[in-house]
Amino acid sequence: MNLPNQLTVFRIILIPVFILLLSVPYAWQSLDVTGVMLPLNWLLAAIVFAVASITDFLDGQIARRQHLVTNFGKFADPLADKLLVMTALIFLTGFNVVPAWMTAVIVIRELAVTGLRTLIVENNGKVLAAQMPGKIKTFSQMFAIFFLYLKDVPFTAIGLPIGEILLWIAVIFTIYSGIDYFWQNRVVFSDGL
Image 1: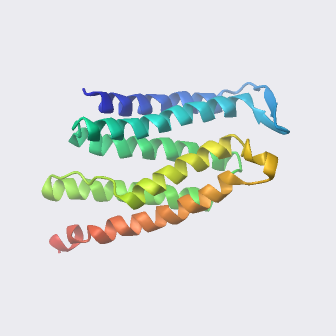
Image 2: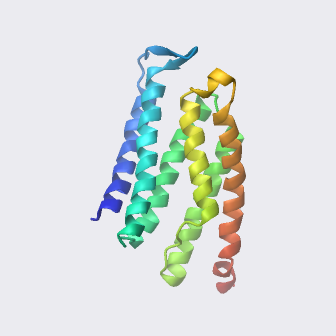
C-alpha cells in the first residue's frame, strides 16, 4: 500500500479515537482559553480532527506529485472525508451546536454523491474523482468543524463566529457541489432508461 493510501487508512483509524474523546462518560476539565471555557476533550477532539484533516491534504498532494493515484485512493479518500465530517457534525448536533437541518443536508449530500460514485463505477468502471466545488466544500466543512469544536478560539477575542460563518459557506458548497456532481454525471441515469 502506497503512502497516500496509508494516510487515508490512518485518517479512518482516527475516527474512532475522535468518537471516544467525545463519548467518554466521565467529566473532562474545562480550560479557560481567552475567556472561553473549552472542555479539554473538545480541544483534544479538535486536534485529532485537525490531524485527520491534514492527512487529507497530504495524501492528495503526495499522490498527485508522485503519480501514486489509485482507484482505492480515489474511492477511499473521499469516503474517509465523509465519515470524518459526518461523525463530527452528528456530535455537534447532539451538543446543540449545529442545527439538525444543516447536518441532514450535509449527510444526505454525502450519501447521495457516494451512491452516484458507485453507479459510475458500475456503469463504466471509472472512479469519480473530486472536483473543485467538492474540494471547496470539504475544505470549508473541515475548517468550520475545527473552529466549532474550539468554540471559535482565537476569533472569540474579536467576536467573530468563524465556525458558524464557515459552516454556512460549507452548506452552500455542499448543496452546489452535490447538484454539480449529479448534473455533470446525468448520463448515468439516462443510460439505464
